Every structure is written in C-alpha cells, then in structure tokens.
Length: 158
Image (cartoon, rainbow, N blue to C red; front, side, top):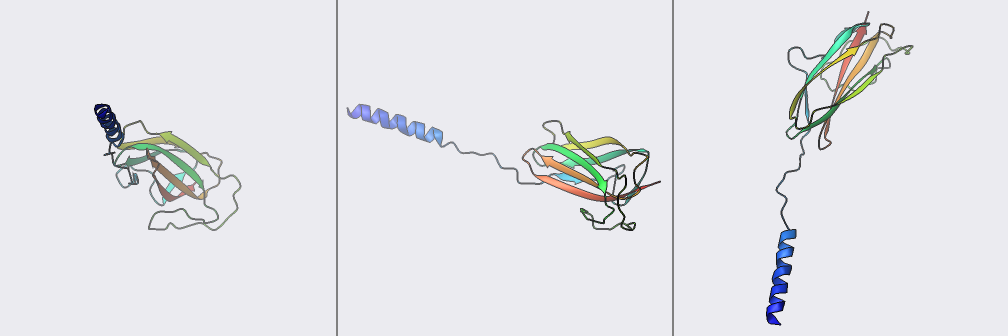
C-alpha cells in the first residue's frame, strides 16, 4: 500500500510540474514605426497634389516583432479640424463648405513574417473634386494589435 501511495504521489507531482511550464516568450509592447523621411517618400507634411493625377504613396514600416496591416485615409479638412502628428503647420485655405470632396479609404495586409516593409500604392486623384486642404492619414498595425497613426496635412491643387 505504501508503494502504491508513493507511485500515485510521484505521478501527481510529475503532472503538476509539467503543467507549470514557464512561458519564456516576451509580449510585444512596442508600437510599429512609420517612416516617411527618406528620399522618394510621399506624401510628406504640406505636400501639394494636382487634381486629376495619379500619385504614388511610399512609406517604410517597421516593427520589433511582426507587422500586420496598414490603411490609408484621405479626407477634406475644409473646417480646419486636426489629426496632424507633425510639428510644422501648413498654410491653410479659408474655411469652406465641401461640395464634392475627395474621400479615399483603403486597407492592405502586409505579408506574414515581415519586420520591415516598404509600402508602395498608386492612388488616383479625381479631376472633379474640391480643391483645398486635406488630411492624409496612415494607420499601421502590428500583429499584436499595436497601432501607430501619422496624420499629414496636404493640399489638392489645380
């Protein structure tokens, strides 16, 4: 009987210790990085874009663990609201009511396993939209769900 109790307690101890396996992986607590301060990056703060043309968005993304996705959002700033994450301000037009403003929203998944990625995306700027002040928002999310936002002020011109 003593041998049976010993074997049962030994088995119970083994199962207990096996279930207490420590987690040595680190939790990702860092935000991903949006870089638009390199040659050919576009747009940058205060960029002017001609109506009716095609532009090429270029930015570099990085993360300490793994990137996830990004989205782009272009919308009017005729009422002078702010999303800017930049230090310098642009010269703004007078406040006005939108008639036919541009609205562009697009999301893209970054290929799995990437810690760095150069995003390149062509965007058509319609020829019949309102001219003036717009925001160009870049949202970058890593695999853990951390998000970085870069808000740029741009101007659409004739």
